[in-house]
Length: 538
Image 1 (cartoon, rainbow, N blue to C red):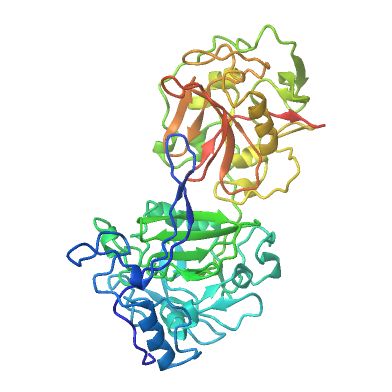
Image 2 (image 1 turned 60 degrees about the vertical axis):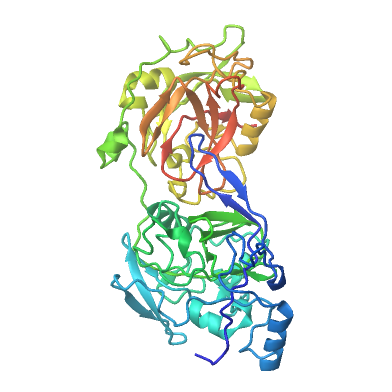
């Protein structure tokens, strides 16, 4: 380790401006949580009347010198040298010896990068072998990589920071470009036999950690140890260090860890681990970011899709996945839900001979009832509670890959099927509603549920069914909670290029004094099964 004086007095890093925390609540929506950027200088430390520092997440336990004095110290030690810090910010490292961040109770493996001879610790988590430290490979041909603050020792301790095109090893992944390299996984800048983490692999870590930072964070290398109180730190040996980020400036060292994810998108997808709030999750934004890389070992993975099934129980090895709701249908017979004041059309599905009512809304012809086609060859479809009577009244519930008729739309997969409308499991000449089409429908209804809800088929006050779409409270299947929502919510799948499951939600209740609102929602945490409405091709 080079002999360089590290100030033991902490100067808080400037923090990333906006975090989009994926908050999994009852409404399945994401809640944006913003945090003001902290740009605290050495000379502006807040102190009480007795000279002690006031509270705050970035307070230092020691006295604070002036910026000028530190800059003078640096300039006199070595000007412009790669072994000196290049910005006015210095950090108490907390991690001072390479490797001291690892959990001594974990049995790590090792891998050696044949390109430069560097050796890395590895760890097996849930059957996948991960690098347990950040990549520090400098001889790449595309994009940029930096050491934090342009100081070599930070690379040795925390690994390098890479632009997206460097991480993915492809010019298509430059900032503000559509990083479409196929469904993945892709090798990127990783050594042969290793790849950039996929969305699915990363989300598995987030779930394993319960969206908490502590289970992923290293034992040493964070400024925010107190925020990990009551949490087990690094039980899996992944040992993420708070290596920070370059986003027009260096920041967040000792407070945040970031890791590139490969996902086909113009937006940057990455794992964020917050020591400030003990939170971990996947984020996406269109920004010029330079962050860390971890690699995952390749394995023989056959593309698997669930077989078609008329029973979710048959497709599940866990009895908890087939939990049934104690529910009776709120329709007496098929067709009771339709509005007698609407002039419906009909269409017959040539595949099984079933006939459906149709209605023209927004100059588009929609099915006015949910699809009940059981012949899907990809994914799973089932009746609510696995009882045929619910299919006859409310239509079937489909996994997303079944709805889109594509294995790349299985849960946690990219579902990148292009921007055009897709037929999915709909009959020839019909397609799955796009996000844009669903948004137009919501706008037509002034964002209210009532104009879309049927006059019968709900647990409490039904809708007005203004347009004859006659959405019923079909419920859905949730891989964690089981069947639920009969008579309470209506749904239909939406096609949208995203690993997150998108659907139109039409709830029957919004709380006392609140209007019922229809909305597009997304749900990334576990698999759900929803009904389908098809739209006639133009």
